Image (cartoon, rainbow, N blue to C red; front, side, top):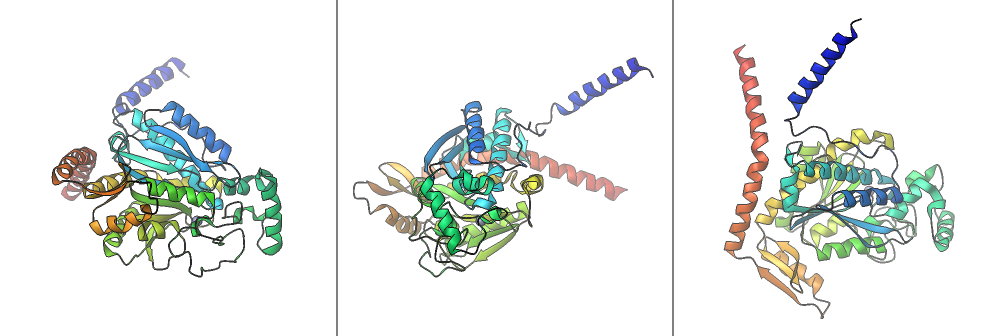
Length: 423
Ligand SMILES: [Zn+2]
Protein backbone atom coordinates (compact mmCIF):
# COMPACT_ATOMS: atom_id res chain seq x y z
CA UNK A 1 0.00 0.00 0.00
CA UNK A 2 1.36 3.42 -0.88
CA UNK A 3 0.86 5.44 2.31
CA UNK A 4 2.42 8.53 0.88
CA UNK A 5 -0.14 8.48 -1.93
CA UNK A 6 -3.00 8.00 0.48
CA UNK A 7 -1.79 10.83 2.69
CA UNK A 8 -1.46 13.11 -0.29
CA UNK A 9 -4.97 12.16 -1.41
CA UNK A 10 -6.42 12.74 2.05
CA UNK A 11 -4.68 16.10 2.29
CA UNK A 12 -6.10 17.10 -1.07
CA UNK A 13 -9.54 15.97 0.05
CA UNK A 14 -9.32 18.01 3.26
CA UNK A 15 -8.21 21.12 1.31
CA UNK A 16 -11.05 20.73 -1.21
CA UNK A 17 -13.51 20.21 1.65
CA UNK A 18 -12.35 23.36 3.43
CA UNK A 19 -12.44 25.41 0.22
CA UNK A 20 -15.88 24.13 -0.66
CA UNK A 21 -17.58 24.60 2.65
CA UNK A 22 -15.83 27.50 4.34
CA UNK A 23 -18.08 29.97 2.51
CA UNK A 24 -21.30 28.27 3.58
CA UNK A 25 -22.72 30.02 6.62
CA UNK A 26 -25.11 27.22 7.63
CA UNK A 27 -22.65 24.60 8.81
CA UNK A 28 -23.90 22.83 11.93
CA UNK A 29 -22.95 24.56 15.17
CA UNK A 30 -20.57 22.77 17.49
CA UNK A 31 -22.25 20.72 20.19
CA UNK A 32 -21.13 21.41 23.76
CA UNK A 33 -23.72 19.66 25.91
CA UNK A 34 -25.71 16.43 25.56
CA UNK A 35 -29.47 16.82 25.52
CA UNK A 36 -30.67 13.23 25.12
CA UNK A 37 -30.37 12.68 28.87
CA UNK A 38 -32.41 13.97 31.85
CA UNK A 39 -31.36 17.49 32.84
CA UNK A 40 -32.09 18.46 36.41
CA UNK A 41 -32.18 21.93 37.96
CA UNK A 42 -28.51 21.90 38.94
CA UNK A 43 -27.30 20.93 35.47
CA UNK A 44 -29.60 23.49 33.82
CA UNK A 45 -28.30 26.20 36.20
CA UNK A 46 -24.73 25.25 35.30
CA UNK A 47 -25.46 25.51 31.58
CA UNK A 48 -27.27 28.83 31.88
CA UNK A 49 -24.31 30.35 33.72
CA UNK A 50 -22.06 28.97 31.00
CA UNK A 51 -24.08 30.67 28.23
CA UNK A 52 -24.32 33.95 30.15
CA UNK A 53 -20.56 33.85 30.84
CA UNK A 54 -19.57 33.00 27.26
CA UNK A 55 -21.95 35.34 25.47
CA UNK A 56 -22.57 38.34 27.76
CA UNK A 57 -23.35 40.47 24.72
CA UNK A 58 -26.64 38.67 24.07
CA UNK A 59 -27.39 36.46 27.09
CA UNK A 60 -28.32 37.66 30.52
CA UNK A 61 -29.55 35.62 33.42
CA UNK A 62 -31.64 36.57 36.42
CA UNK A 63 -33.72 34.83 39.05
CA UNK A 64 -37.40 35.78 38.95
CA UNK A 65 -37.93 34.31 42.42
CA UNK A 66 -37.97 30.97 44.21
CA UNK A 67 -40.05 27.84 43.81
CA UNK A 68 -41.85 26.23 46.75
CA UNK A 69 -38.71 24.22 47.59
CA UNK A 70 -36.32 27.15 47.13
CA UNK A 71 -35.06 26.72 43.57
CA UNK A 72 -34.64 29.73 41.28
CA UNK A 73 -36.97 30.30 38.39
CA UNK A 74 -34.30 31.45 35.95
CA UNK A 75 -35.10 33.98 33.28
CA UNK A 76 -32.71 33.92 30.32
CA UNK A 77 -32.89 36.93 28.07
CA UNK A 78 -31.52 36.14 24.64
CA UNK A 79 -31.08 39.04 22.23
CA UNK A 80 -30.66 42.79 22.21
CA UNK A 81 -33.88 44.09 20.74
CA UNK A 82 -36.71 45.99 22.36
CA UNK A 83 -39.30 43.70 20.77
CA UNK A 84 -39.97 40.94 23.31
CA UNK A 85 -41.48 37.48 23.26
CA UNK A 86 -41.75 34.80 25.92
CA UNK A 87 -41.27 31.02 25.89
CA UNK A 88 -41.26 28.72 28.91
CA UNK A 89 -40.62 25.02 29.37
CA UNK A 90 -41.33 22.35 31.98
CA UNK A 91 -44.41 23.94 33.52
CA UNK A 92 -45.41 20.29 33.81
CA UNK A 93 -42.70 18.29 35.55
CA UNK A 94 -42.73 15.11 33.51
CA UNK A 95 -42.56 17.14 30.28
CA UNK A 96 -39.01 18.12 31.27
CA UNK A 97 -37.59 17.42 27.79
CA UNK A 98 -38.94 20.90 26.91
CA UNK A 99 -36.15 22.35 29.10
CA UNK A 100 -33.62 20.44 26.98
CA UNK A 101 -35.21 21.94 23.85
CA UNK A 102 -34.71 25.48 25.16
CA UNK A 103 -31.13 24.77 26.26
CA UNK A 104 -30.30 23.35 22.85
CA UNK A 105 -31.79 26.48 21.22
CA UNK A 106 -29.54 28.58 23.46
CA UNK A 107 -26.48 26.52 22.53
CA UNK A 108 -27.15 26.86 18.80
CA UNK A 109 -28.31 30.48 18.71
CA UNK A 110 -25.47 31.89 20.83
CA UNK A 111 -22.84 30.21 18.66
CA UNK A 112 -24.62 31.28 15.46
CA UNK A 113 -24.88 34.88 16.66
CA UNK A 114 -21.10 35.11 17.04
CA UNK A 115 -20.59 33.99 13.45
CA UNK A 116 -22.43 37.06 12.08
CA UNK A 117 -23.89 35.57 8.88
CA UNK A 118 -24.91 32.24 10.33
CA UNK A 119 -28.30 30.98 9.22
CA UNK A 120 -30.37 28.37 11.00
CA UNK A 121 -32.89 26.85 8.60
CA UNK A 122 -32.89 30.07 6.58
CA UNK A 123 -33.26 32.42 9.57
CA UNK A 124 -30.57 35.02 10.09
CA UNK A 125 -29.86 34.61 13.79
CA UNK A 126 -27.90 37.82 14.39
CA UNK A 127 -30.31 40.10 12.55
CA UNK A 128 -33.28 38.70 14.42
CA UNK A 129 -31.64 38.77 17.86
CA UNK A 130 -30.50 42.33 17.32
CA UNK A 131 -34.17 43.32 17.01
CA UNK A 132 -35.85 40.87 19.35
CA UNK A 133 -35.20 39.66 22.89
CA UNK A 134 -36.53 36.21 23.71
CA UNK A 135 -37.45 35.81 27.37
CA UNK A 136 -36.95 32.13 28.10
CA UNK A 137 -37.92 30.52 31.39
CA UNK A 138 -36.41 27.10 30.64
CA UNK A 139 -37.72 25.36 33.77
CA UNK A 140 -40.93 26.84 35.19
CA UNK A 141 -41.42 23.96 37.64
CA UNK A 142 -37.92 23.07 38.88
CA UNK A 143 -39.01 21.16 42.03
CA UNK A 144 -41.33 18.98 39.98
CA UNK A 145 -38.64 18.28 37.36
CA UNK A 146 -36.12 17.28 40.01
CA UNK A 147 -38.71 15.04 41.62
CA UNK A 148 -39.23 13.16 38.32
CA UNK A 149 -35.46 12.58 38.14
CA UNK A 150 -34.35 12.16 41.75
CA UNK A 151 -37.52 11.07 43.52
CA UNK A 152 -38.26 12.03 47.09
CA UNK A 153 -34.57 12.54 47.86
CA UNK A 154 -34.62 15.64 45.65
CA UNK A 155 -36.97 17.45 48.06
CA UNK A 156 -34.92 19.85 50.18
CA UNK A 157 -37.54 20.99 52.70
CA UNK A 158 -38.55 18.48 55.39
CA UNK A 159 -42.13 19.72 55.59
CA UNK A 160 -42.62 19.21 51.86
CA UNK A 161 -41.45 15.60 52.10
CA UNK A 162 -44.05 14.97 54.81
CA UNK A 163 -46.75 16.62 52.68
CA UNK A 164 -45.82 14.34 49.81
CA UNK A 165 -46.24 11.29 52.05
CA UNK A 166 -49.70 12.53 53.03
CA UNK A 167 -50.58 13.05 49.37
CA UNK A 168 -49.86 9.44 48.58
CA UNK A 169 -52.42 8.39 51.21
CA UNK A 170 -55.24 10.40 49.63
CA UNK A 171 -54.59 9.69 45.98
CA UNK A 172 -54.49 6.38 44.19
CA UNK A 173 -51.94 7.72 41.71
CA UNK A 174 -48.47 6.26 41.90
CA UNK A 175 -46.12 8.83 43.37
CA UNK A 176 -43.07 6.70 43.74
CA UNK A 177 -40.92 4.70 41.34
CA UNK A 178 -41.81 3.48 38.79
CA UNK A 179 -44.50 6.14 38.71
CA UNK A 180 -42.23 9.17 38.96
CA UNK A 181 -42.77 10.02 35.33
CA UNK A 182 -46.48 10.53 36.01
CA UNK A 183 -45.75 13.62 38.05
CA UNK A 184 -46.88 16.89 36.40
CA UNK A 185 -47.61 19.15 39.37
CA UNK A 186 -45.35 21.36 41.46
CA UNK A 187 -43.97 19.75 44.60
CA UNK A 188 -47.09 20.75 46.61
CA UNK A 189 -49.25 18.76 44.17
CA UNK A 190 -50.74 21.74 42.32
CA UNK A 191 -51.00 21.68 38.53
CA UNK A 192 -49.38 24.99 37.53
CA UNK A 193 -51.19 25.07 34.21
CA UNK A 194 -54.50 25.34 36.09
CA UNK A 195 -53.48 28.29 38.23
CA UNK A 196 -54.09 31.27 35.98
CA UNK A 197 -57.00 33.61 36.62
CA UNK A 198 -59.16 33.05 33.52
CA UNK A 199 -61.75 30.30 33.99
CA UNK A 200 -60.13 29.06 37.19
CA UNK A 201 -63.49 29.15 38.99
CA UNK A 202 -64.98 26.64 36.53
CA UNK A 203 -65.31 23.05 37.54
CA UNK A 204 -62.24 21.62 35.87
CA UNK A 205 -62.06 18.31 34.06
CA UNK A 206 -60.59 15.55 36.24
CA UNK A 207 -59.65 17.91 39.09
CA UNK A 208 -59.25 15.60 42.12
CA UNK A 209 -60.03 18.44 44.54
CA UNK A 210 -56.87 17.79 46.56
CA UNK A 211 -53.10 17.87 45.93
CA UNK A 212 -52.09 15.22 43.45
CA UNK A 213 -49.56 14.30 40.78
CA UNK A 214 -51.65 16.22 38.21
CA UNK A 215 -54.86 18.18 37.52
CA UNK A 216 -55.36 19.80 40.96
CA UNK A 217 -55.98 23.53 40.40
CA UNK A 218 -55.01 24.64 43.92
CA UNK A 219 -56.89 26.58 46.60
CA UNK A 220 -56.89 29.85 44.67
CA UNK A 221 -55.59 31.25 41.37
CA UNK A 222 -51.85 32.00 41.60
CA UNK A 223 -51.61 30.33 45.02
CA UNK A 224 -48.24 28.85 44.00
CA UNK A 225 -45.04 30.93 43.73
CA UNK A 226 -44.18 29.43 40.32
CA UNK A 227 -47.44 30.53 38.66
CA UNK A 228 -47.32 33.90 40.45
CA UNK A 229 -43.82 34.51 39.06
CA UNK A 230 -44.95 33.84 35.47
CA UNK A 231 -47.97 36.09 36.03
CA UNK A 232 -45.80 38.97 37.30
CA UNK A 233 -43.39 38.55 34.40
CA UNK A 234 -46.32 38.91 32.00
CA UNK A 235 -47.60 42.08 33.65
CA UNK A 236 -44.15 43.66 33.48
CA UNK A 237 -43.27 42.99 29.84
CA UNK A 238 -44.86 43.87 26.51
CA UNK A 239 -44.50 40.39 25.02
CA UNK A 240 -45.81 40.24 21.48
CA UNK A 241 -46.16 36.43 21.68
CA UNK A 242 -46.26 33.85 24.50
CA UNK A 243 -45.57 30.16 24.03
CA UNK A 244 -45.69 27.38 26.61
CA UNK A 245 -43.84 24.15 25.76
CA UNK A 246 -45.39 20.81 26.71
CA UNK A 247 -45.43 17.20 25.53
CA UNK A 248 -46.97 15.32 23.78
CA UNK A 249 -49.12 14.83 20.69
CA UNK A 250 -47.56 17.13 18.05
CA UNK A 251 -50.44 19.52 18.59
CA UNK A 252 -50.83 23.29 18.98
CA UNK A 253 -53.62 24.31 21.35
CA UNK A 254 -54.95 27.84 21.39
CA UNK A 255 -57.99 29.41 22.99
CA UNK A 256 -60.71 30.71 20.63
CA UNK A 257 -61.62 33.80 22.57
CA UNK A 258 -64.76 35.71 21.61
CA UNK A 259 -62.63 38.79 20.91
CA UNK A 260 -62.20 38.15 17.22
CA UNK A 261 -59.27 40.55 16.73
CA UNK A 262 -56.94 38.68 19.06
CA UNK A 263 -58.48 35.41 17.88
CA UNK A 264 -57.52 36.25 14.27
CA UNK A 265 -53.96 37.08 15.24
CA UNK A 266 -53.60 33.89 17.27
CA UNK A 267 -55.19 31.80 14.52
CA UNK A 268 -52.74 33.18 11.98
CA UNK A 269 -49.79 32.50 14.29
CA UNK A 270 -51.03 28.95 15.01
CA UNK A 271 -51.29 28.26 11.27
CA UNK A 272 -47.74 29.50 10.69
CA UNK A 273 -46.36 27.39 13.52
CA UNK A 274 -48.39 24.39 12.32
CA UNK A 275 -46.88 24.53 8.84
CA UNK A 276 -43.41 25.07 10.31
CA UNK A 277 -43.57 22.18 12.79
CA UNK A 278 -45.98 19.84 11.05
CA UNK A 279 -48.12 19.90 14.21
CA UNK A 280 -51.91 20.07 14.12
CA UNK A 281 -53.52 23.38 15.09
CA UNK A 282 -56.38 22.77 17.53
CA UNK A 283 -58.53 25.70 18.69
CA UNK A 284 -60.23 25.15 22.05
CA UNK A 285 -63.31 26.74 23.64
CA UNK A 286 -62.99 25.79 27.27
CA UNK A 287 -60.92 27.79 29.72
CA UNK A 288 -59.66 26.38 32.95
CA UNK A 289 -56.80 28.25 34.53
CA UNK A 290 -54.44 27.52 31.64
CA UNK A 291 -51.55 29.88 30.91
CA UNK A 292 -52.38 30.45 27.23
CA UNK A 293 -56.13 30.82 27.86
CA UNK A 294 -55.37 33.63 30.29
CA UNK A 295 -52.73 35.20 28.08
CA UNK A 296 -55.06 35.29 25.06
CA UNK A 297 -58.29 36.02 26.93
CA UNK A 298 -57.08 38.57 29.50
CA UNK A 299 -53.84 40.00 28.12
CA UNK A 300 -54.93 39.93 24.45
CA UNK A 301 -51.56 38.47 23.46
CA UNK A 302 -51.37 35.80 20.73
CA UNK A 303 -50.28 32.68 22.61
CA UNK A 304 -49.86 28.98 21.94
CA UNK A 305 -49.52 25.73 23.84
CA UNK A 306 -47.13 23.50 21.94
CA UNK A 307 -47.19 19.76 22.56
CA UNK A 308 -43.92 18.26 21.30
CA UNK A 309 -43.40 14.59 20.51
CA UNK A 310 -45.85 12.27 18.86
CA UNK A 311 -46.13 9.34 21.25
CA UNK A 312 -44.53 8.06 24.40
CA UNK A 313 -40.87 9.02 24.30
CA UNK A 314 -37.71 8.60 26.30
CA UNK A 315 -35.00 11.17 27.05
CA UNK A 316 -32.90 9.39 24.41
CA UNK A 317 -35.45 10.39 21.75
CA UNK A 318 -34.44 14.05 21.98
CA UNK A 319 -33.03 14.08 18.45
CA UNK A 320 -36.39 13.10 17.00
CA UNK A 321 -38.26 15.75 19.02
CA UNK A 322 -35.88 18.68 18.53
CA UNK A 323 -36.21 19.30 14.75
CA UNK A 324 -39.69 20.83 15.20
CA UNK A 325 -38.22 23.33 17.67
CA UNK A 326 -34.87 24.09 16.10
CA UNK A 327 -35.71 27.34 14.35
CA UNK A 328 -39.15 27.87 15.89
CA UNK A 329 -38.16 30.74 18.24
CA UNK A 330 -36.61 32.47 15.21
CA UNK A 331 -39.89 32.17 13.33
CA UNK A 332 -41.62 33.60 16.41
CA UNK A 333 -39.09 36.44 16.51
CA UNK A 334 -39.90 37.27 12.91
CA UNK A 335 -43.62 37.21 13.70
CA UNK A 336 -43.05 39.43 16.75
CA UNK A 337 -41.32 42.00 14.53
CA UNK A 338 -44.29 41.94 12.17
CA UNK A 339 -46.76 42.38 15.05
CA UNK A 340 -44.72 45.20 16.56
CA UNK A 341 -45.07 47.18 13.35
CA UNK A 342 -48.80 47.33 13.97
CA UNK A 343 -48.57 48.50 17.57
CA UNK A 344 -50.35 51.77 18.15
CA UNK A 345 -51.15 51.78 21.88
CA UNK A 346 -48.76 51.19 24.76
CA UNK A 347 -49.56 50.82 28.43
CA UNK A 348 -46.89 52.48 30.51
CA UNK A 349 -46.39 52.05 34.24
CA UNK A 350 -44.15 54.67 35.82
CA UNK A 351 -42.87 55.53 32.34
CA UNK A 352 -41.97 51.92 31.40
CA UNK A 353 -43.83 50.18 28.56
CA UNK A 354 -45.48 47.05 29.95
CA UNK A 355 -47.94 46.21 27.17
CA UNK A 356 -48.27 46.98 23.47
CA UNK A 357 -51.42 46.72 21.38
CA UNK A 358 -52.65 47.34 17.90
CA UNK A 359 -56.21 48.00 19.04
CA UNK A 360 -57.38 50.61 21.48
CA UNK A 361 -59.99 48.45 23.22
CA UNK A 362 -57.31 45.88 24.15
CA UNK A 363 -55.28 48.60 25.84
CA UNK A 364 -58.37 49.86 27.70
CA UNK A 365 -59.32 46.36 28.87
CA UNK A 366 -55.78 45.35 29.80
CA UNK A 367 -55.07 48.49 31.80
CA UNK A 368 -57.49 47.16 34.44
CA UNK A 369 -54.68 44.79 35.51
CA UNK A 370 -52.63 47.78 36.65
CA UNK A 371 -55.13 50.11 38.27
CA UNK A 372 -55.44 48.46 41.68
CA UNK A 373 -52.06 49.85 42.78
CA UNK A 374 -52.71 53.55 43.40
CA UNK A 375 -49.00 54.25 43.89
CA UNK A 376 -48.32 53.52 40.23
CA UNK A 377 -48.49 56.05 37.44
CA UNK A 378 -50.41 54.22 34.70
CA UNK A 379 -51.05 55.58 31.21
CA UNK A 380 -52.02 54.58 27.68
CA UNK A 381 -49.67 56.17 25.14
CA UNK A 382 -50.53 56.36 21.46
CA UNK A 383 -47.64 55.95 19.02
CA UNK A 384 -47.64 58.69 16.41
CA UNK A 385 -47.80 57.85 12.72
CA UNK A 386 -44.22 59.14 12.28
CA UNK A 387 -42.98 56.79 15.04
CA UNK A 388 -44.74 53.85 13.48
CA UNK A 389 -43.39 54.63 10.00
CA UNK A 390 -39.80 54.94 11.22
CA UNK A 391 -40.05 51.65 13.15
CA UNK A 392 -41.53 49.98 10.11
CA UNK A 393 -38.65 51.21 7.93
CA UNK A 394 -36.06 49.68 10.29
CA UNK A 395 -37.87 46.35 10.55
CA UNK A 396 -38.62 46.06 6.84
CA UNK A 397 -34.90 46.39 6.14
CA UNK A 398 -34.20 43.47 8.47
CA UNK A 399 -36.94 41.36 6.94
CA UNK A 400 -35.65 41.97 3.40
CA UNK A 401 -32.16 40.89 4.41
CA UNK A 402 -33.69 37.88 6.09
CA UNK A 403 -35.43 36.71 2.93
CA UNK A 404 -32.57 37.04 0.46
CA UNK A 405 -31.22 33.51 0.92
CA UNK A 406 -34.72 32.05 0.73
CA UNK A 407 -35.43 33.83 -2.55
CA UNK A 408 -32.11 32.57 -3.86
CA UNK A 409 -32.84 28.97 -2.93
CA UNK A 410 -36.32 29.04 -4.47
CA UNK A 411 -34.87 30.44 -7.73
CA UNK A 412 -32.39 27.61 -7.77
CA UNK A 413 -35.20 25.14 -7.20
CA UNK A 414 -37.06 26.66 -10.14
CA UNK A 415 -33.97 26.26 -12.32
CA UNK A 416 -33.58 22.61 -11.36
CA UNK A 417 -37.23 22.01 -12.23
CA UNK A 418 -36.60 23.67 -15.61
CA UNK A 419 -33.75 21.32 -16.34
CA UNK A 420 -35.85 18.33 -15.49
CA UNK A 421 -38.63 19.61 -17.75
CA UNK A 422 -36.20 20.16 -20.61
CA UNK A 423 -35.03 16.58 -20.35
ZN1 LIG B 1 -48.25 19.81 29.88
